[in-house]
Length: 271
Length: 271
DNA sequence: GGCAAAGATTCTGCATGCAAACAGCGCGGA
DNA sequence: TCCGCGCTGTTTGCATGCAGAATCTTTGCC
Image: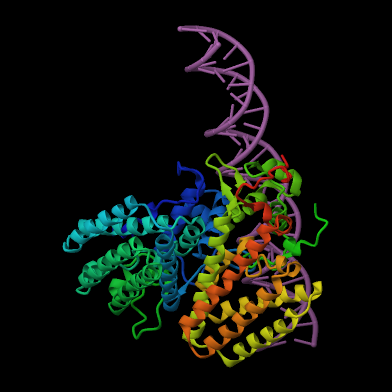
């Protein structure tokens, strides 16, 4: 089931867990549960009971319950009235809203940065990242793609930091914790499809214009650019959905229920 | 300590707790903990250990730990590296960001509603609420004020529902769960101060214009109006801060650390 | 044959015991 | 006198036992 690189969903950092040494049972359960959910190991309507999970994850019920509650807050699980959880399903509309929401919040971060001003050092750092991105855009190997992903996430993380607003940062984390609303969501499809190059070039141009807008204290422009920048993910999503096999390979794709297509037998409905 | 009505912070509904019959120990601990935090029962840097809380709340450690984790997600507590929690403190800048953030998200909800269209019945409901608000604005008794608060929250809740975006609703809940970012935050000050009447009238006008914008599918206008509408809270906050005694009476005021004033002896530093 | 009620089973929520980790403190040595 | 080290008390994290609730099944009655 895990023969593919999968972009390392099980190795993402936590951020809200107080323990930096992630050797507690809680973090173990969290990471493993996320991995199982992203891999679609739970059927859409399947009730997740604790005891089978205890047996499956090798942790006791206490940390498991903590992890389940955490994932409910994250939005991946939905609590049932009688207790227990179900993996939450997202429609394509939800995905669109998530991307738009990230654009709104990142746009606010960009506006804050522009309005409040940022040190020249921060702008230099953004420019440096973007310059490296420009070089990577014109390559096609897998390593360059991975470096691109890393740099892109760094760019967005720095942008959010520059807003100097802990509450905004928090709200953004709450949105981007969903796999399809992360800054680099659906970018995987680009490297394998003809339209990818164009989108990467456009994204780089967005970054350039955004830096300029922030430097010139143009808050409204910075916000608008960032919103449109986020919407590039939607284009990628549409490209991926058109080629269903590309879509299926995206991490967390099992969470997204596409509208019914003609062929419904291709989905590996693992029970 | 609790001689004042306090706007019923201990009786607010949950929303994310799966059990509708709130008789579990977890909800008991949650409600009581929130009440204690809002009442400023914990000193700013005080480490909240579990055992004293167990003794104080009368619940066991298991549901208490769940409640503490929930409050950390809510943003009221901050987890310490070695374990344990501290009540999070907010600066006046955080409060401003929280209000602005609510404006951004509610503005997005208004834009979604306008862009996607809403049934005429929903618009009628908004108009009915707003008509009642208009009558209440011109009264000065306490009951009218309470009814105003209720109707105002209904208006905003309906607006969010009309966006038909579960993710947006979620993100908004994450922001408005903070006491100073709720739609009716700082409105308490208005009823006791001369500027209150004007602000209420302006707010009513905002509502009217917002309904019109949504009806005419003017998404950008709806978003701008709603953002500016949220910023009315900031005016209220400034009025309250100017009269420190009014500010101190606001619920959750102990969470907000104002910049140092000349008199620092008036604060009851409970240790 | 269908429906309802009662029983059995499974599951969740809670309380508590135990061990490891962390903090505070005293003591010994340089 | 000051620094390092070990000890002890406290606290957190975890595992598990128990009781109540929900659900499914089965059986009896209409």
